[in-house]
Figure 1 (cartoon, rainbow, N blue to C red):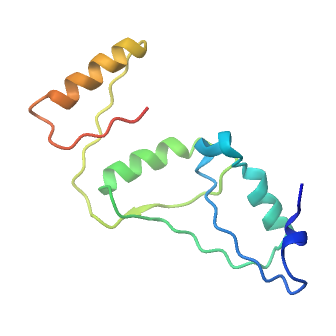
Figure 2: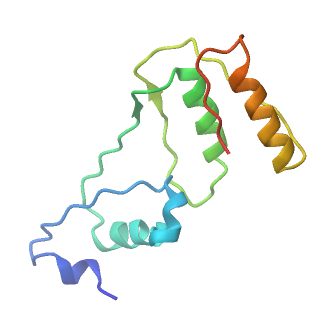
Length: 120
């Protein structure tokens, strides 16, 4: 396994792009330890946090932020929406995958919701 020191010049000329909130990609090698190791190896590196969501209203961004904030190994961040406010978050608790599928289909096909996202 390579180290960050092995892939950069002696002048610490290296850049990485990562997101410690994207652990859904662990199946393809994403590991929060890489970011921690990078920060330890290059403590003076400039860090730029991309915290603007360009797709969702602030209510959706806040609900998502609340959910991912429970990950204790992540760096705390404040996310904002470029689309302002006006979104609605509706929660539905179901007991199993079959109920989930049925409820999701009912919501998607209902007349009272025009734009729907189903998060699993």
